[in-house]
Amino acid sequence: MKLIKLLANLGYGSRKEVQRMIRAGAVTDDTGRVLGEKEVPPHERIRFRGEPLDPPFPVVIALNKPDGYTCSSEDPGETIYDLLPERFAHRNPGLNPIGRLDKDTTGLLLLTDDGKLLHRIIHPKSGCLKVYHVNLDRRLEGHEGELFGSGELTLNSDVKPLLPAGFEALGEKEALITLHEGRYHQVRRMFAAAGNHVTALKRISIGGLRLPEDLEEGEWRELTPDELAAVFEIQDQGAADCLKLVD
Ligand code: URA
Figure 1 (tube, rainbow, N blue to C red):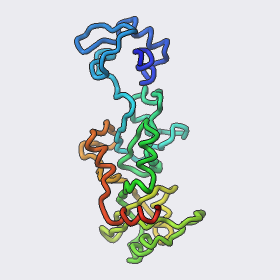
Figure 2: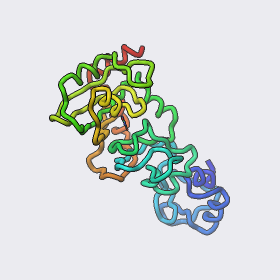
Figure 3: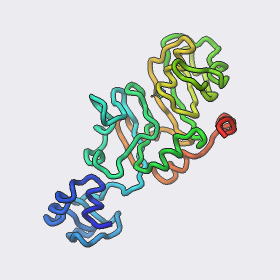
Figure 4: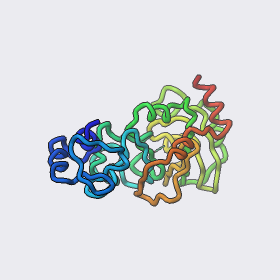
């Protein structure tokens, strides 16, 4: 790929703007030598105004989503894209969330520009379990595990029953929920169906990948290859059962 196209696709500017910046000497290699339009050294050796370039396609990043940010760039108010460098919104192909979180849900959100990878992770067959930490308004009643695990719970305005979900009580008003699918407001609607109300919701893992401890709320970073591989680790029998169900 030519240098102009590479930088434009990474969101550094339009092709014309990027061309101007290259001609002005903004793009160098790692020794500080100014690059011309026709030169494309290995990605990791290119510098833009002295800084390493953003990761090339395909990229997967993890964001620790804070409360109050929506996942769609079309929504009014603050969006997750406000937490990333401005140029990320101009990447081509663009970065999309792998399974959205509600505005008031926090925790692990993955974004990628790789459509195939995105579908591989969100499809129930992938076995990429999503685990949520839930705080509740009212005390747990003891029937939630059976209700959520039954495979027979159909939520309001849905046609198909939910796949069995994992449930673990952590306290009187606190639980972990493990999902194999991602329906609209799923966890909140599940607890509403059980006569309760979710007061705080945080996604703590996707597949075998936990929310990285080094990631403060609002921070993001590229996933390492090992972390990406961990997303596809199937961790428990629940996931294996789920795979049979959707086969
Ligand atoms: N379930 C919900 O209700 N909301 C989310 O953001 C994710 C799962």
